[in-house]
Each structure stands twice: as C-alpha cells, then as structure tokens.
Length: 70
Image (cartoon, rainbow, N blue to C red; front, top):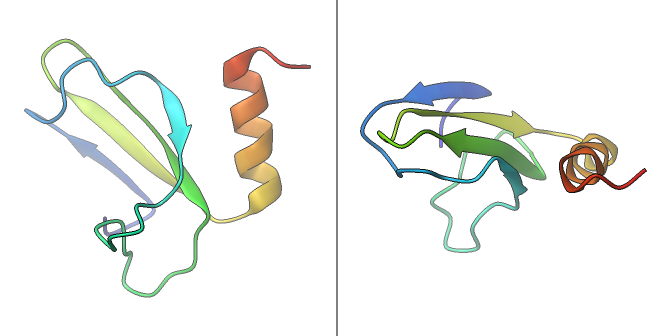
C-alpha cells in the first residue's frame, strides 16, 4: 500500500468498515513510512478507501469507536 490515503474501484466487495493491522507478508509496505494499521471499507461494487494510521493511540481510538466501546 502506498500513500497515506487511497481510494480504489473494483476491489474487495463489501469490505466491512474496520481497522486492520498491516499484513505480516509485507504487502502493506508504504515506501518505508512507519505505520501501525489502517481503516478501510468498501461498498457492494468494490469501491472503497483506505487511510493509513501512523500512531497506536489513534489506531486504538478508531478501533474503540467502530466497536462502539466508550
């Protein structure tokens, strides 16, 4: 994955809006920019977005909000 935020078409269909950790296989490598995960989701047609998260506290906050944890 390159860049801090991307949109895409014809990708994963109906990807649930959630936060994800980078894949250990290295496919989420971002030109050496350190990051802890990303928020991503898509619609029924596979049109979606991905936003890279660089700080653990932001990752945890987003995770809690999506899960409805206060």
